[in-house]
Length: 368
Image (cartoon, rainbow, N blue to C red):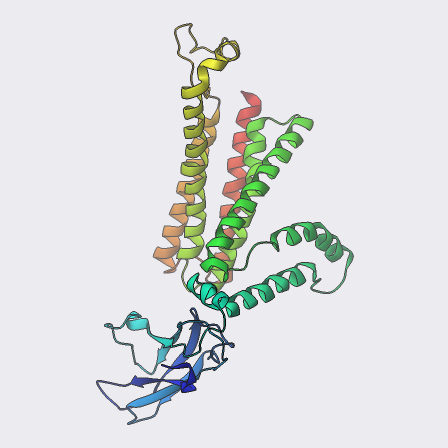
């Protein structure tokens, strides 16, 4: 539809019956068009079909801003059907919702070659303005103190303030379709993880704690607590437990397959190409190892320690956790939540499994 059309009309039809009262909600979602600069948004507004009513029309106000921005689009989303109604399975939203895409045809003329160039490059002035506003709000939220002032609250605020300011530099998700934010935040997390690992290693060295103990305690806590908070948020906000449990299993798979595989692959390539340049130092380092012999070729080597016992204990605790989840599904019908007594007991068992894993692993390291 044309930008001067003032409003977009979307018709929702009721088929296969007209008796009873049914309803759904309608909302809008930005595409290239940005609310409220290009259209006035709808936010979970109720649409009700009275008994005998077969058709309802939704109007979305279009803003004629007289700016050359090219053709833009946004989505109108119908969901949360009530009264026994469902959406057509043939639609692009499936039986749970229906989607309609509205395309706003630009009828303005470019006032300069710069405007035409920006549109050709996919740059949207409204999107950039909204990105700038969101970025500014991130810094305001980072320095804002929330809650009642107290000694503990102020201390925690000051402790978190530098990190909140650093991560406020992360680009808003609107910029680059979310990919810019993903790449930048991933880099920030990588740098932060490296810092945590170094600090934990120095702390373990100062306190004369074994490196293996430091790895499964300080380093593990520092790098995994963000996953814990993300899983908690998913458990509270999502309808199903898939996101919460999937976040934990996915995080561990990344740690094992990518976190180990990528550095090992790079190290193996390095030693295969430039290993001969450091042959004397390499042989001096591994001369006392049981597997070493003068005929062993120079290459990437990781001598085995006592990690096997720790991994065995971890596997046992992990199997206990899976058994607990399966037991909850068999008895309660779901994995997370439920009556407070069952939730507290389940949580206590999982926390106890973590302490068992750490305690037994540390004990084995100290006695071996």
